[in-house]
Length: 119
Image (tube, rainbow, N blue to C red):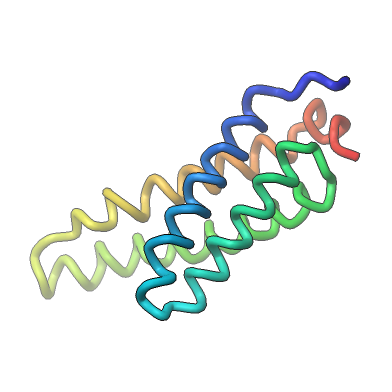
């Protein structure tokens, strides 16, 4: 049996938490986009934990998309929202950690030592 790297276990665990959170919170709000993201995160996390390469590739794609989205949200929040509403703390609480998690996931899953473990 292949020993799973701690980073892959952490990414899959955080993905499960984010997925379950999105499923339970947004299923009551009729938000199909966040519900779809939650189910996708849940499925990809299980695939990452099992070291499936399809899950690694799809997580890399999702992380890349999230980097663009959360980067744009941070720029928007600090450039526009703060000027008109006076407080941009929501960006630091939600957007920045998710941006950093996406960057870290992308870095870890593209690591040559970790790449070879996926099948």
